[in-house]
Length: 365
Image (tube, rainbow, N blue to C red; front, side, top):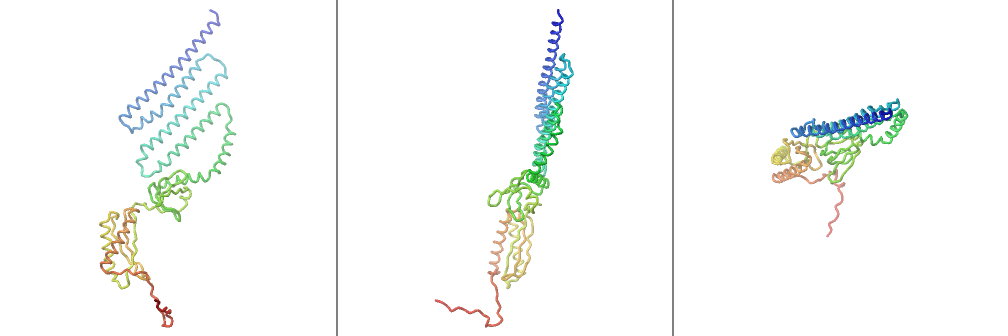
């Protein structure tokens, strides 16, 4: 047998070994994927909320990818090919493959952890901070991971990334200036969510602005529905810089003040007693009232009446309107029954002499 034939057979044999190595790693990767899937399903049947099955599922893709890349690298190294340039090319390809695998693993791990937290932990927390903030964190983290991986790959293949980083710095500054309002709204929305003072469902009122129920707190704006069933979209930067009244904080109970007045001829002690008892009866029988003893206090001497107010507390803002109406009807009915007069608005004019009296027009038929 000639040398050429021996060399050809040797090359063929080593090529066969290289193919066998790659096939072995490929089969191993498939078996590993099946084992991971089976194990995850088995654990998930016993404990649906367990963290291990989700972790195993997120690791399947990166594990399969790394096994294939490793098998391909080892199979290529087993080939009888000499030369520094060839070895350098194989090493660069291996480095790129490892970077891709690591980036994929980091991205899968990030998505897994955040998704698991949103599914298992977030519903048990008292504030919506994690529900609103973590999806944004996930998006930013993935962008950073893929960007870093791309820069490493470019540097590996010999592309200088210094000019690219400088250009990105200038471009980033220009983009940041252009997106300043949007970024301001984003960080303001993060602040509003993190502060926890405004939650979905709360009835809020902006100082000198609209009022309504909060239906969504987004990354750019907050949406409220007014009592007229209109949707108002408020930029988060405006919401963060203005005075906001939350009618459902620190709790849903809301105080109501009912103003009234009685004639100057009335017995004020009697008026106070009747108003107090009436308000207590209304509160004790009303489904809109909170557990609070009403307060009656006189306020001022008005033009026509001695003014007073009844201070009570409703279960929430919606109930405050009903409770106010019930207290007004109850006091009016009791004052009418007790002959306590509520004057119409009148004004008494005093003239120093008869000559100052206005002329009375003659009667007309």
